[in-house]
Image 1 (cartoon, one colour):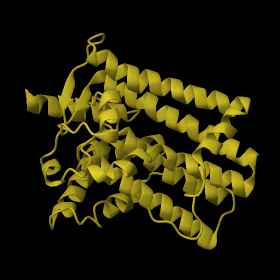
Image 2 (cartoon, helix red, strand yellow):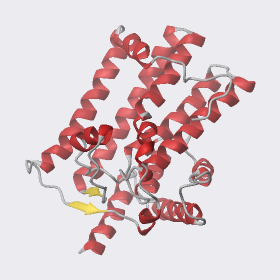
Image 3 (cartoon, one colour):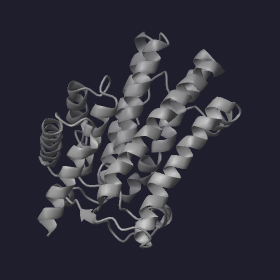
Image 4 (tube, one colour):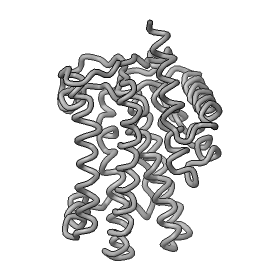
Length: 290
């Protein structure tokens, strides 16, 4: 990930977590978030895998997925996504003190908790999966043991990194960060979100179809930050520096993501919330599989 003179990369994640656990309010936020992850991510899909719950599972593969090669060496970037959103909190703590770090930690954890809970409304309606290679080595073995791979649309990986870079852009502005410092941090976090989003296809944890659904979700959850123009800028950056792709593949992926995002936005305009449009999106794939 790109880092300038001012970077979050030197922050120790463990120190940020310990700081949060030392205070009652931030500890409560951490525990609430972890409880939601256990209930609405792990238990939800394992309950279906073990046939304790019945939820239809829809295949959401896109034809363009086959044009993205499996790149297991990118697993480190994919797994960085939790540390990616924790490190900026440590940077805030160093620059502005523990109280500021705790305030933004509580706010961010509340938003990320909301993302998991609202995505679960979709997952309980229809779960979704993609083809992923049988590659049981190293950290892939851990992923495939812990993730039954039923919660693809919308991609929480993409939702969270988009939430993070837009959230911290606002936070740094509120804290009065300007000039080269603001530019370095914004560049690092934006490019980090792009790279992590790309890896969900490279390591075959998601489909092209999973990305626009996540972008649409964030455009409704944080509409003041993830605007249509912000989504355009983000999509424009995906798979631009992509030597593993054949010429023209990146263009086609961006076009497919933009078209699906536009369709979800148009069809969901009359909905009170974002899940119904994504649920209808999944039904079209279920009908196509029938």
